[in-house]
Length: 375
Image (cartoon, rainbow, N blue to C red; front, side, top):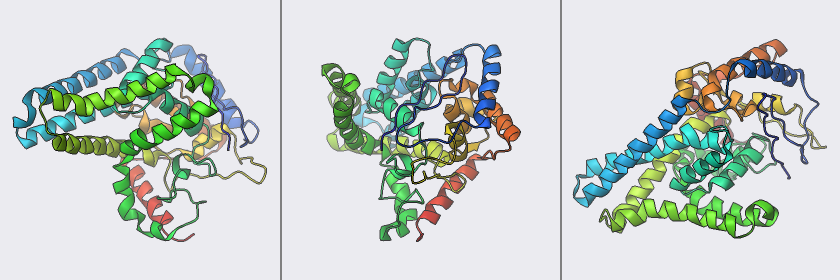
């Protein structure tokens, strides 16, 4: 199935709508028109759509704390007590995750800064720490995830795997009845799979499908540099400078990637994969029963969406619907954009799905259990 990149949201605040591929949307809805009007009004008084000073301060603090923890770990070496080593590895991994939350995600959408060079530099650097190609991740995230969330037949998100059944349209297999046991364990391997399998598979595919952006020596060098930076931080420096044994390095690496994967899963998976979210299927002609804006509304789950505190803490993950509808706005606008979505949904008589953080996690677990049973 061909899915094309959503058109970028303009600085004036027009809601982004994707160019149609083989999956087509219903005609533009009243909800889309109301959103466009409201975001246009908001953009007149909101100032810049880019990150504010608080976002930059959070990013600097996360980088500083993470670098400090990593430096102390290297200086302490294998002679440090095991609990101290564990705490320093955990602190380093968590700060690296916060860099993704505070800046990496927004930079991938071009909303951290008005400078394209700054956005690209942050995308490369932050994702390279995690061993992920930032350019490739940004392409996957914008071109696929933001275009058709929860749509069957796309091979993305809930539709991407047969190991865990997350999409109701996928046929149940005998092993799915045990997924309540093994799925949470697989979530801990998310970063490893992305770094050492998905990245290589998708990069090879994109060099053939889109040689203008991913072909040639430049993208190959960037991809190789991503893996080199990651390996140097995760293994090279700990062995050469820290004096750690390879077994300790491997154990620490597995623990760090599991921690990052767990944080990502808890924060993000339930915002779409939930028994409160819709999984709309195209008809025989490939047309969805809703337009693009309505699709984002019915497939996204929010928790405490009006909270500025949680928006700053989670990079706007609590107001996920607003982010999907206005991806070119930095997360410091998330709580106010969520209010726009709530008002627009109410004005158009459409359901708006919001719960608490605990409710979001519980809804994902209920969905996981429901999908483990025969259709």
